[in-house]
Image: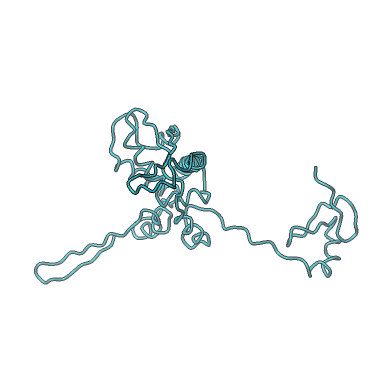
Length: 245
């Protein structure tokens, strides 16, 4: 049970207000706070600024350095968790496993995404579940089998490794193109990437170069994106026409 706070100026009990700057000093009224400011300002330290809004779109956002740092997150627990195939979903589980250990995982593990009913949120839930199980398995397994005092150079030290298979969430399966027929892993990956872009909230009015610039501003481009440069050369005059996609 919380104890009653006393006003820092008049000492009345049940002070329900606090200093908005340091969020620490209690007051019973605005008048008491103003009267006490000359004394309190010497020790009043502002709180650290709140973290920037967590968003799937990073362009011109103070949040981008945080996301860049998350993209470099390393997996130290290994790949111990497998995905069970449900029917003919082997092509899809392969894609999900690749995404689970891609740079996208660092972003989705460290940071929150906007919205809950989209592919980005579904992948975040899946990746966090897999990495949590990886970490748990790595902590509970025996460290080594064998003796470190073995002087035989030909003897190998065997590393024990616990593994586990889990089911892919139904909600994630429903968001893919899989509908009971065999499909191609590349087709599934392209579909997932398209849905990830939709999760970033593109305006339907964007077209052409504006749309391309917007795509470059998203986390999807940071993870998967690249520009394709090509050039057409006239066989008659030798004029070179470069273009970028």
